[in-house]
Amino acid sequence: MAKGLFDLENNFAFYGAYHSNPTNVLIHMLFVWPIFYTSLILLQFTPLLLHVPFGFGGGVAWLPLNFAFVFALIYALFYVFMDKKAGSLAALLCMLCWLGSDANASRLGFSLAWKVVLAAQLFCWTGQFIGHGVFEKRAPALLDNLSQAFLMAPFFVLLEALQHFGYEPYSGFHASVRAKIEAARKEWEAKKGKKTM
Image 1 (tube, helix red, strand yellow):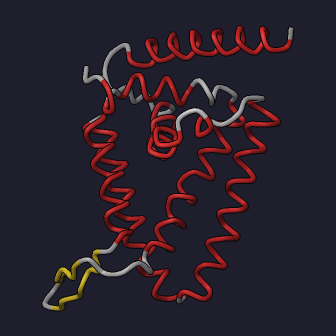
Image 2 (cartoon, helix red, strand yellow; image 1 turned 135 degrees about the vertical axis):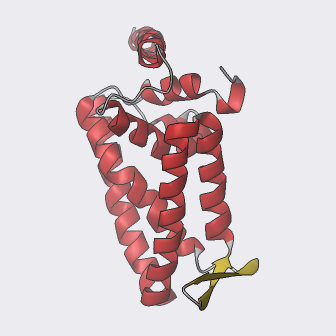
């Protein structure tokens, strides 16, 4: 298996060690993708990098390639490199979020969009911090590794959902991840125990 940045098992175990409580996982499943989506709405107001023609049935529309597109593309490629099957589904979701955010940004306009995004982000982030503080009783992963937590979050919740349908990236993946999560949680609990002494 690939090591380093695209090591799905280690990345999933890192993120999973902060998300072992089922209620906290459910909260993240509900709020992570809306955070991603609403971030794209704001990024739709960044300067255009390129206009690309895109047409169906004789009509041509222009896709605005801006920082929202770059953001969605980086996430999409990251997920595909981590796991071809689930990563392709995650990449599709990223690009659908980009298209939807473009439509909503155009409809809302900047003055209303930033207010909607601010309200949604505050609501979603508050929910996640409640999930960590009340249910997980552990600080979020972003406090230990900001980039990994932000990059992994949407893919983590998608893999969690797919796991309920029996998806496993490769044989033994879930057993190996569970073992790594358990080891990481025991290490964290031992450190926490030393601090309280």
